[in-house]
Image (cartoon, rainbow, N blue to C red):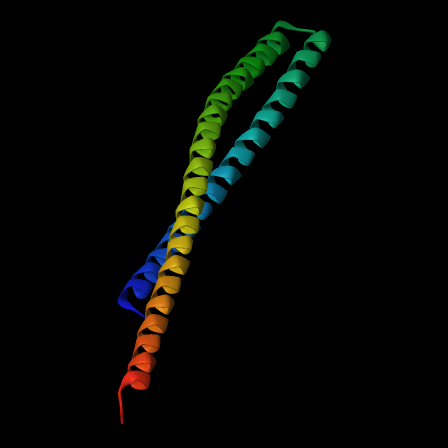
Length: 139
């Protein structure tokens, strides 16, 4: 194996390691996005329940409590929605990085194969020239 082949194989391994790290980060971001989505769904459900409970209010205290609860949930829902938007942007960015890493791995892999072919062709040419010289020399 020539030095150039070893170098190309090293580059392929290095890019595959980077791809693994990017994929791991993508998975973590996707999990965070899923958690945020679940929180958003739960908060929407709680907010809907708080709205339906307003029909059964009998006193000022119940009204104040229900309004406070609804406002608190609405504020949390706003925060979670903002977080969800950020997670979606991070997720899109991570997917882009993974796609780029996959492309780099593919390109380096193709270069490694080409380098191997060139080295094999060069070795074959040397072998042919060595064998050709043997046949031409008189004994």
